[in-house]
Length: 157
View (cartoon, rainbow, N blue to C red):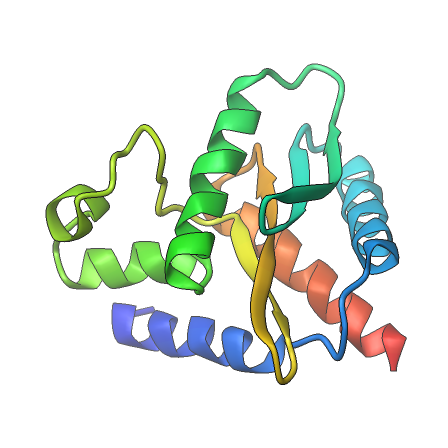
């Protein structure tokens, strides 16, 4: 798939995966769903759900390492800076043939434009935080988060 088509796909996700509200209970349900899916697939991941500056869900599977927390933080920083998914930003940078440092002066030690973090977008409010997974391939991290949000939204209504 070409980069323009990917950007369109990721933009549709940003436009449609919107919560009516988002509570700590919402975070728990989504986090537990991600754990359930990861267990079925024997994935060793770290999951983080964060309302800006307030971690409301975090879980690391056995045999994960602390570097997953660093990846979570760096991906989450991209979402909190640009209010788009980390994979959207990665794709946009690739399309523009640049990186976060050259274009925005953002340190790779603190920011990672790779798949796995998605903004928590609340209707009539905007971005209030992020849901992040680390431990798989970036596209798989992203897919797990997006599928879990979509599942929650489809069953919550």
